[in-house]
Image (cartoon, rainbow, N blue to C red; front, top):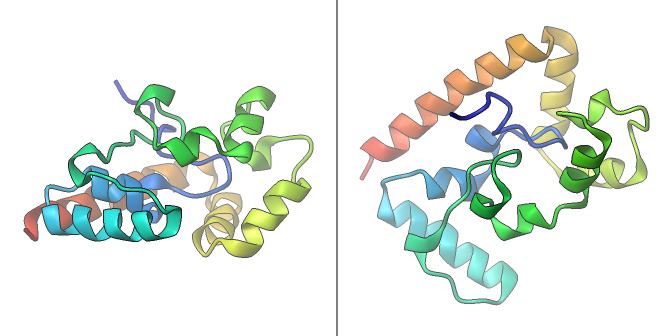
Length: 141
């Protein structure tokens, strides 16, 4: 059974609504998988098979995680610190997180909303949004 935190990146992203790899991996729309795979191939300079695109979220089992997420310094640090999200860490905000937040569109907004709504209320809202988005993408093909 999945934890409600499985789709939460320690950096503040929510895989179900903010991560195109996670969304494509769970979509039944093969064109969406191909589009994301092609973008990843261009970005990474490697060949990928859309049918092998898989990820179970930033806090899911490592063997089922997109390889870039497995290597993520923020994810690994948060795991070592024993926090679900970096705002729980005594070192928040560290330099590595500050750099990420300056580049991410969704993570800073999510962190603001978590601070305002409270973690549990925010994550329940994101889980509902994620189910709606997944339903739309799987019905569009």
